[in-house]
Structures are given as structure tokens and as C-alpha cells.
Image 1 (cartoon, rainbow, N blue to C red):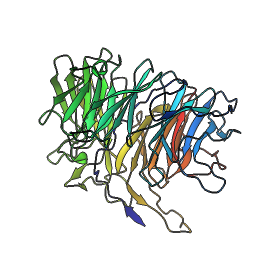
Image 2: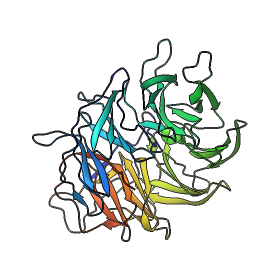
Image 3: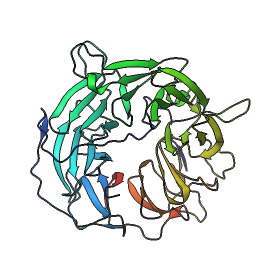
Image 4: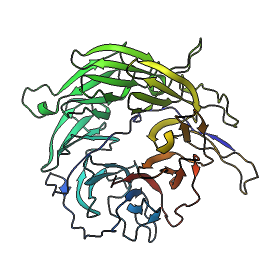
Length: 452
């Protein structure tokens, strides 16, 4: 049967999967923080992956499980306790810690951030946030974390803050940015861009001004006619230029595009629509990835909240699909467009070995066969694999939302969490490898390597 999920987005859903770098394993002394007394429990593995399990049932415990990323087996170590419903994870730039957020909008949500010391494989600090987050960035030296909390209450103003957390001293301040949902930090760490729901402006946050009396910590740039519901940014090596992704119609606006913006003069340099050519262009962009000077941008074209892209070139029972666009950033030109992928709201993307680009979505059109499954029956979920070398697209026969993608750097393998389960893909075939982990039980959400 065909199950078309609602691909409309009530609020922005992060495009770029925010980079979180954070916290050495020091004691967190902020108000609301704690230093758990967790006993050491090392697996002894050299090539590890952490995977978050968001459910507890019977003897099954919610937490972060450790995998041997060299042999694809579960480590003989207890799961790390990291809150009631652990989901999103991010590894710090120095790879010394992993940040885990627990809080999925249920009654058991605790909006807890936990810091795992990767060497000790144990939780060293917890912090309760003022609300749920989908985006955290950290200074390049891993000393300060910035957390976007769109629902945090602000006296006399609309909800929304960027909470600042010091590795050595807990929460040290906040910048008020109404509705801020996603963040991007530049290479030097002296400028952060904040993206809010239903806004055509971008908040420029100056970390050194946060908490300074009469300081100007937040300055808006852009606006209607420049940005169209912006959601992400990538920076040039010298930090003078930001390539800002506008989500357009998929996020309640008009047209998806990429803007080259001069951060020195705060002026627009160039803009390129993320659209197919022709009299009836299809435009989309809700998740992006930059590899060298090439940007890959995926999304689902929409009109009045309804998907509009046909599954041209695919043999499928799905009525609508998504699009992948390739953009050359130096020339600000579209080099490839109209690459048909699954629909849904795309918010996961990673480049594996052999040029295989994994694109994940949620709330896509799923095709679930009856049980028992007839021979040759179509199975379709929210994962697309695009070969950047040949242009081929593969839609693996697996159901479910994609919530985690992690290439294994030393191997031609990519870990994908889809529908709550882990699948291990061989990038030479763009298919599941023969060996899968069969004794990993739970409802899994995210997966990250911590050693490479």
C-alpha cells in the first residue's frame, strides 16, 4: 500500500544538520547542571560508533550503545545513560566528547543535554535546557557551545534564545533571537548566523558581545527580496563570504535558492535559484552539503503546501518525488538539476566512499507491501543514494524515516538509521551489505563515529 505522509513543514526543520562541538569532560557547575558519578566502562575498541536508542522496555535501556565500526558488531559494554529519550548526537571537533540531546516532545521528554567523555565511555555532565533544540554549534576551540532554543521564554519579547554554555563554567549568557531554530558558526568562531521560523532575515550573532552591557550582540541582515526563508549557511575559508540556503516554498516561502553574501559589507553578491530549467521550474532545497566547492541541495518542490514534482524516470507507485540540485559555488551556477529522489522533508545528507551521496528524509511517501510480501513487490522509504560519479540514483527497498547517516571513514561502508533500525550499506553496490547487526534491539535514532 502507498502511505503518503504530510510533507508540509509547520516550522523549519533544520537543513544542515548542525555541527555540534562541545565540552571536555570537566565538571559542569551551571545552575541546572550536574556531574553524574558514572563508573568507568570502556569497551577497549579503537574504531567506535555510538548509536542512540530512545526507548526503554523491560531489560532494554534507553541510552547510547557502542558499536565496533571496524567489524560491525555490538561492543560488550553497557549502554551509556544519557536521558529519557536520547536522539540527536554530535561529536566535538577534537573528538574528545559526544553531545547527546534527549527530548522528543513526549511526556517523558527531559530536554537534557549530556556530555559523554569518549575515552571513558561515560557521561560526565548533564544540563537541562530551557526547551527542545535541533541545533547546537561550538566554537572552533571547543570551549563554548551555542544552543538554539526557539521556544525559550523571554520576558517582554517573543520566545527564542541562543543559550551560551561554557565548558568550564556552565551557562554564561544568552542572546535573544525570536524563533531561532538553526545555527551556523564561521571558521574563526567570531560570528554565528541564526535562522528563525517564518523569517526572511538572518540574525548575525557576535559571541564577544553576548552579556556585555549596551553591547550589540544580534544584528539582522537580509530580508524580503534577498533571502526567502533561509535555513543554513556555509562559509568561505576567510569568513568574508557566506553561502546562505533559502528553503523557499517548502518552508512557507516562494523559491529555494542559494545566496552569496558578503559578510564584510553585508551585501548580496549573487543568487542562484535551486530550480529545474524551463517554463514551469520546480524548486526545492531543505538540506545541503558542501564538498570542496560543490554544493548538493535536496528538497521537495511544493505549491500551496502540496508536492508538485512527478517521479520522472522512476518506476514507482509513488505519485510525487523530491529533487537534488548540484551547484558550483565559485561561479554560482547550477551544474546539474532535476535529479529525482524520494519526496518528504529532507534533513539528513552525507557523502560516503566511492562518491555515494546519501540523502535522508522524513514524512515521505512510503510504499509498504502486504505481508507476506509478494515476489517483486515495491518497497520504498525515505532514503535516496546518488552516485556523484555516474549520476545514478538508487532508492533502497527499506521503509521509514531516515534519522541518522554516518559514513565509516576507513571503509566503503555507511551506517544509516532508518525506521528506528540500523542498516549498513556497501558503497560499491549502493545496497545493504551481507553482514548486518542482528542483536541490536531498540528504537534507534542517530549514529556517529567517535574515533575518526
